[in-house]
Amino acid sequence: MGRRSERLSRHGMLASDLSGEGDVIQVVSRAFDVLRCFEGHEARLGNLEISSRCGLPRSTVSRLTHTLTRMGQLVYLPRDQKYRIGPSAVAMSTSMTRGLQLRNLIRLRLQDTAEQLPGTVGFMIPDRFHLVYLEYGRAARAIGLHSTTGDRIAIANSAAGHAYAAALDPDVGNALLAEMEREIPQEAKCLRASLEHNRGFLRERGYVVACGSWSPHINGLAVPLWSPQYQTFVVVTIGLLSAMYDEARLHREVAPLMLELSAAISAMLDHADGEIFHNRLQDKPHPATIGDNNKIIGDANELEAGARRPRPPRSLRARDGRR
Image 1 (tube, helix red, strand yellow):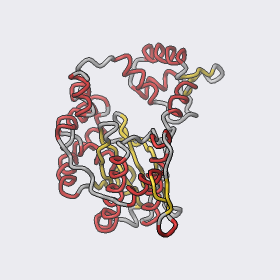
Image 2 (cartoon, rainbow, N blue to C red):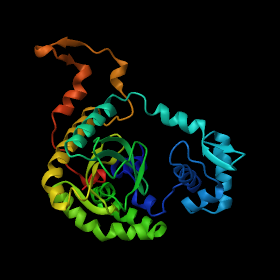
Image 3 (tube, rainbow, N blue to C red):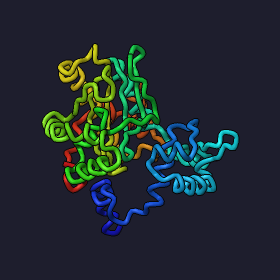
């Protein structure tokens, strides 16, 4: 692996990349900006709407959508004169979600915690200025927050985003903030106001709280975890009705459960080498024996066993882009 690849693996992303410098190929970056505009397979957007959403000239967007259509990443709808996600993009995303044993185990843990509180609990991964729900759990009586798999929330306006930004190495976090200030200055202002406080609170308590930032009716708490596979932080977060859970109650009742949940998920990620999207256990037989209490013991249950034995997340190290 070359020096640049090593630096990327250690920091998740380079500060120079975040600040618009370095050797990032702009046309590739912009193509992904276009694809990010389509939130869900049913979204239909024209060039003008895409231009407005991603801040690119309409002429540039037109060339990109033409190319992406030729590649099958988008399809053009003549009657609407709009585009939607194409078969190649759907096929790519589908192939990446094969072997869901680990994600299923994570979903069960999220659901268990959601039922105890009650609320909506999410497992999220970063995507530029947003976080995306990979999995979620929701109590039947949860009110006010109905995010689901694939939904995106802004880093600047959510407990999950504040936790993610606070966990980043300061150089990387500051570069992300600088990029946000150029492209979305109002959101960057919200993030900057609490960033230093959140960094200190995360070091001291292991989690971050944000009250009313996403919605005045929702209070949130989030715990960042290092992902060995993606070499960046993922986030476990919960949203609760503010009328039921004020900040004091978040610290007193919610934080212990979320820290326990995050330790369990961290153990699962470590045990599976962070391979969220691929189940290597499918490639080999699963020897199993029947132990006491008629419980199956063997390789097939190793991940689940790890889920039942929560342990503290790994320490944060600067060399990995962590603090």
